[in-house]
Each structure stands twice: as C-alpha cells, then as structure tokens.
Image (cartoon, rainbow, N blue to C red; front, top):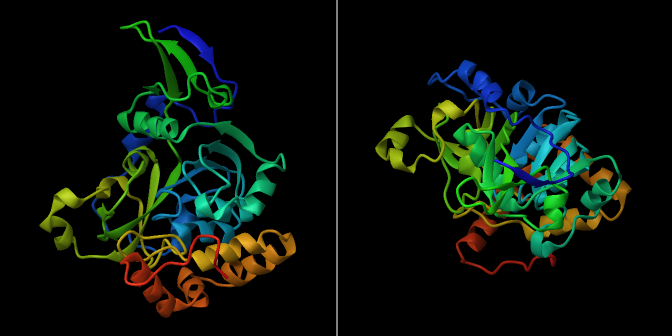
Length: 335
C-alpha cells in the first residue's frame, strides 16, 4: 500500500498488534468477583505515565467518580483520549493529570460554552497534542479491537486536522482511491460508566453508546463504574442486553449517580446549575482552587461529593427533569 501523505502530529501509542496481543494473551479471563472501591481501582490500574480513556459522550454517562479519584491520588503524566470529552476533560485539566492528548472534542462543554481553565491549560504549552476527528478516534479503537495495526476511513482527508494528526493518506490497493489510515489505539486503562453490572463485570448501558463498544474491546485494563450491581441471574435472564462481557473487565465499582453532574439516560438529567458553577469559578484560578478543595480534595468519596451538591433531593429533581416531569434549567443559566 503506497503512502501518499502523512500528518505531522505525534503518535503516542504503539500500534503494533502483536505487542498488544502479547498483553491480552496473559490477561486473566477468569469469571471472578471484581468488586472494589473507586480508590482501589485507580490505585491498582492507573499509574503515572499510562494512557487513559473515558467512555460516554459529551456530559452523558461519564465516569465522573474515576476522574475525581485521579485528582485525589495526584496522578500525573498521563496520555488521554479526548474523544467527545466535556466535563470529564474539564476535571482532568483542573488536576493537570495528562500531558499528552489525542484531541477530537475538548475544552468546550457544548451549549454551555468553553471551559476557561481547560482553555488555559491547553494554551499553556504543557500538553503535546495530536488532532483527530471523533470518527477517526473511534476508528482507531475499532482497529485495536479487531487486532490490526490501523483502520481505514475517508475522514480528515484534505483538512488541517489530518495535518496535525499522525494519520497517513494511502492508495487503496483495490481501487487506487485515496484513503486515510489511522493507527490502532490500545489505551492502558479505560473507565466506562454503565446502568448496571454484575460482580463479574458483565455490564449493561442504555441509550447512546458512541464508541464505548470499541473502547471496551481496545482497553488493556477496564474499570466499570455502575449505578448498581445486580445478581448474575439478571444478566443471564437476557444475555443479549450485555454491552460489555466480563472477560474484558478488571474492576467493578458500584457508584450510584456516578455520571453526576452529567446526564445518565433514563435515570437523571445533567445538573446544569452545578456545571454553570464550575464554569463561573474557573474564570479565577484562586476561586477554582477553593472550589476543588471543597468538592474534590476535601471529600474522600464520590458519595460525599453528591451530598455536598444536594444529595438525594437534588438527584430526585434531576430524575424528574430526565423523565420530563419538570422543566430543565437552560444550559449556562444555572447558579
């Protein structure tokens, strides 16, 4: 296959499938109890310098509890996959957790505007960046899950995104047409939040999945946070609902409201008032430090954080908004 052009961006992870296969060959597929705390999961699987990825989409079904714990444990020097990341990216920027970034959608919180602190961090020169489209990042994860060194798309060709990526333009051996080859991406660790799972790691999520299917198959280690842990009989009752099978999972963490202040489809809406407060305090670095001390560093568990934000009463309000039983606060018009 002839290479016609190539991007100038850095490549952070080795796309060699045989090296990845060597790792997965030695990974246990035992059906054992994997329940643990968020603290233990981060201690065991997320090390300084590793490459980390989050599941979900925008502020929907994000693993907030794991992101908080990364800050509390002071992780540094991570690589990160910024694939449609909003509040999770905002949290990680607040702790300066990563210094290498595969960027597709970052800094913005969609209709809520741009995160002032994430923008400061990305403009500080402290982060190496490679650009990708959202689809291209998903194609990289899909290639990893398929056990091949690259995926083929038409995404990014002829764009500045291609120039700032590590992709290559290649000639199709069948048609002679130009295609975009994107290198496989095997994150060292991924965290995905789901609706329910059993203690072995069989997990079910509802609503939009975006690239979580691909991410769960590509990640070397996978932390599942879940709204609730169910008996394995619930999984066996309809195995076709299982989104992620147990043998891909390393840790199962029960975290009710674990996507808060993000949305959890069919369970609770995003807390637009709290997200607006994040955006407001970020304008002043000193005020942001006080905010982080209160809500992240000053608590030991995610449950304490949710209590600080209004606890069960606030979650019930968000449940009613999600189920269209009461109107939502428009984005950016919170406290």
